[in-house]
Amino acid sequence: MTTQPTLRPDCGNCFALCCTALGFTRSADFAIDKAAGSPCPNLAADFSCTIHQRLRPRGFTGCTVFDCFGAGQLVSQHTFGGTSWRERPASAPGMFAVFKIVRQLHEMLWYLDEARQRTFDPELATAAASLAQHVAATTRGDATTVLEADVESLHGQVRSLLMEVSEEVRASYGADERHLPDGGLQPGADLMGAQLANLSLCGADLRGSYLIGAKLTGSDLAAVDLLGADLRGAELSGADLSSALYLTQAQINAAEGNSRTLLPSRLRRPDYWGDSVPDRDSGPN
Image (cartoon, rainbow, N blue to C red; front, side, top):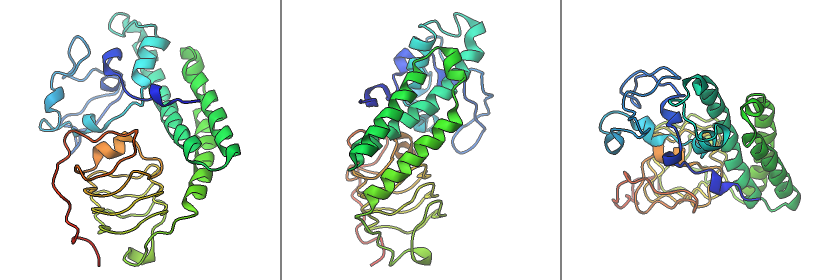
């Protein structure tokens, strides 16, 4: 089973659900406050963004980072049959609630698809495919089916499988811990602003770690578990993330890189990344 083709945003077939269902607070990522369930003031009548080409300079970096994993078009066109919340205002609360759940389920599908492809164990691959099939069936149900889904239980099942695959894939790698604080890396580590350039971090478990502003220039992140890691402002110029584990487009969108940054084939290089050549002498020796 391949779920990936349905997990990419198609904004042209969405009723701007990310711009309406979700709220945000004025911060470095958003220039204004917006309550959940209310349309963004930059939303046009045709559900497009009136400042789409100027989001970053206008203070809406968060919008350029967000990824719905294809939930928007599924909820708009399938669950609610192509009738927008503007055409039927009474549907808005339900549509927005369903979107929030389907986005979580689609994110699970994204990870399960990778786990199925990366594992060496046929039984784990089968388990990932089976769980993905169950999650996908839930997303394709009607609004009531989605709203009644036991998302917490599904999260637990998916997390358990992802961790098992991660341990298996990382088993043949060893992170270079010689230059790292406290002798190594661990899940949930506070590595904000850490100097991790030009290192072989292969096989490290950075799940849930804070890598905000960390310098990973020129480093090798083969089989590094990045599930839920915060990469905002992380410097990835010249880094090799082509076989990193559980990397998402949103994480890449939040980081800084260049034309020398290697990414997994299913992720795209952000248009706003620079093309400068990384400094190979900027890390530990």
